[in-house]
Image (tube, rainbow, N blue to C red):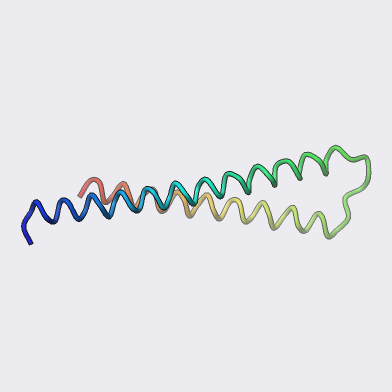
Length: 84
């Protein structure tokens, strides 16, 4: 394969990876917005938080942190593809 063809293929692959990342991040943003609104609503109530809600909050927080780590990894991979 010629260098120009390989460069074009690499750019197309990188463009697709960035577009996919953007779509995934937009979806994640919407989910985080929903969860933050839910967290705010729960804490605004004067009632005691039951164990199921507390467990749900904990799982949601863990999910959010996991997704952020996944995005960081994907960004690092894309950055590596740019510098190659």
